[in-house]
Length: 330
Image 1 (cartoon, rainbow, N blue to C red):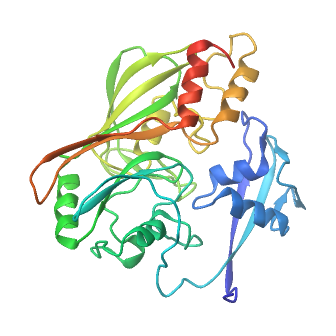
Image 2: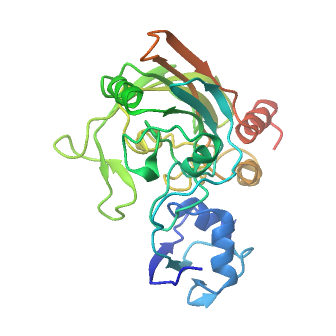
């Protein structure tokens, strides 16, 4: 085992409005590049303190709690290793492949998270991946967040990679997401145009910034279904900024349901409805992440020039939340 050479420290504050949630789950949802198993290991080794005292994984966080996390960091491996991790291949040919990424898996290795990623899995699946980027990002043309599920395009050589990347740059890639968002919308469809930049309070987070700051971001949305206190949306990206949908929806006061980072695990609508808090808590127990799925992906195949369009089913957790919302059974 490699010798530990350093450590990273993180501090989380539980703010007002946060529902009671297991400590391990809360940290997993709020700490970048974390997984529940890794968080539980930290807790077991007394590397997680709540209000200065070691806590158990099933401790329920409450507003006012202060969480201190110490993460031992091992040296970055000389190369990214192939790992036998199941991967859902939707389509594959000699040039590229399309993956249906499950929630909870990081796309590529990064600081403190050098294994168990989609790239590790892809390297086990095939030895032919583009080296357009650094080896730890082999084949990756674009990314989706760890706790977002859905379709991801992977290139097998540099020529294919560069031409797919050009389609993303020119915004000719067709990408459609579906998300459950808090509240009911005044209009059946609309758009959000607002620059996105890093939060000045937490550099790992993003937020809407003034027009002369950050990067231009443009999101279209359409209401597919309405429920008692939430809506199912179809979302299309004109641009592709980090956390774009999550930030834009929070900006217009309709955060993605279940999104602990951008306010989606707080009671945002329906405070006047009977037993609303317990009903919402029951739904949040079903989904421990943002209810966001990259559902369709369309592009022109660089070699064949064929127009290709793929669709994926909503994962079980999002489908079950929708089922409960439709039936009013919580």
